[in-house]
Amino acid sequence: MSHTSQIKVRGFHLDVYQHVNNARYLEFLEEARWEYLEDSGDIEFFQSLGLAWVIVNININYRASATMGHTLDVKTSLSKVGGKSAVFHQDISIAGSGVAIADADITFVVLNQKTGKAVPIEGDLLERMQSHLNSSKEEL
Amino acid sequence: MSHTSQIKVRGFHLDVYQHVNNARYLEFLEEARWEYLEDSGDIEFFQSLGLAWVIVNININYRASATMGHTLDVKTSLSKVGGKSAVFHQDISIAGSGVAIADADITFVVLNQKTGKAVPIEGDLLERMQSHLNSSKEEL
Amino acid sequence: MSHTSQIKVRGFHLDVYQHVNNARYLEFLEEARWEYLEDSGDIEFFQSLGLAWVIVNININYRASATMGHTLDVKTSLSKVGGKSAVFHQDISIAGSGVAIADADITFVVLNQKTGKAVPIEGDLLERMQSHLNSSKEEL
Amino acid sequence: MSHTSQIKVRGFHLDVYQHVNNARYLEFLEEARWEYLEDSGDIEFFQSLGLAWVIVNININYRASATMGHTLDVKTSLSKVGGKSAVFHQDISIAGSGVAIADADITFVVLNQKTGKAVPIEGDLLERMQSHLNSSKEEL
Image (tube, rainbow over all chains, first blue to last red; front, side):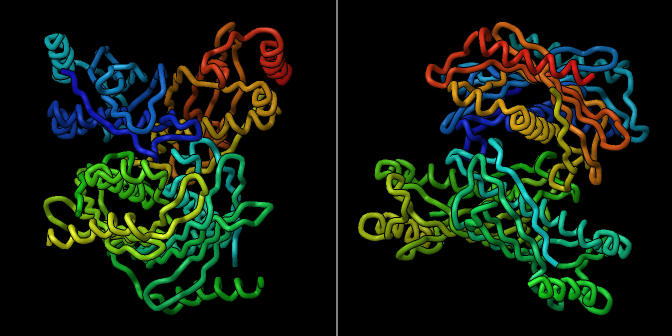
């Protein structure tokens, strides 16, 4: 599965260089991941099991700058599922032209909210998360 | 009592017009109110009684614009205590020159965190809050 | 004319009290004003004359708190046009239930970007801005 | 050279999980880099040459969560200077306890503001930047 969110760049997103500020991109990425999760129906699945996703690493490349008047496409897909963690890949580009603005890998673990500890990704959980990978491929 | 906080304007505080964005000023004001409360010793008093301060109105005038390289003085004092609400007055000016940037009145009620309802400002609570007014005057 | 924007409350909009933070509401209001201006076709009119809108006062009432999962309706209309300034009125409510969350009056002046000075609201400019008021009334 | 900034965690820095939000950490890191640059006297050097620093990658690990009442130490040093880019290393920990909260590598290029293009890091520029590395080592 992959999901594309659209975000319009506004004056309050920019900084002294007239470009979208580094920190704002993390909010755009978070907004897009929420929309992905709503689309996939996974929010309920994870909440019913008392599980939360906790980010342990963000690795983001800034390719070019976006500014006022740009509409951004933020594309989100699950790119990797391991035994202890999984990875979202997200791309930000200018809608229309497709010019690459930024891309990021977001690594997260699955937390048991009662114990506060990460749980191994196995069984039903693994299956559920792998189904996202498969459906991503199908879209290609 | 009055308290002055200093905040240095950074690139990420600015927006498309190269000026501090309207929403950022509310963060500067909130930072200054926290520092005021820490200074006054009131955080413990209110917490021990299970009371929180909840903002019901912000009225802010923007006089001139601050930009990169400016250091701002944010002056905070309690300006009015009524039976149901009280008011903080806050002034933002450029450190050194004293040029007025913004001023705001922040009206809040005192909330009982258990009931979720506003409590009347009377008795010990009134006395405590009025002592802030008195000490403000003494400083003049 | 009036315009309604919708904003979904996300985790990063909230603060320590689990409610949308005061400063965030100003971003929601700014987003809604941009959408209003795009809708009205006024961005081009003002830009072609080298005019910008500069906020001189925000007066915002916080009525109730919005939290995760809420979708907000932000309704924007021009409510008053004077000789030197004009006022946007904006209401934030919870979509569906209509529960009032906040309302604000945003007073602005029209700035000549070359001179950096406010211009009187008269002639074509006055007419243009008054047409917003009229169309607001027609919608009632 | 290395520089330590202190930042107090406030209510408006937190998100729905009562922890400092991912995007806020980027603002804390940016604040700390500005303070580092002011301390080093490099802002003037780079501005006089018409050079700006542009971030091309941020790689940040989130180790533990910070919340209300925490004061954070943000330690910044230049960790690597290459022919085309250089890297800041930054560590965030809880003041007092030293508990690790986050660490990040910030890769940047040096941009000629007139041409808008990255310049090779060589000659005086290389020497200037390498002097930061050396003084970092001396502090150990």
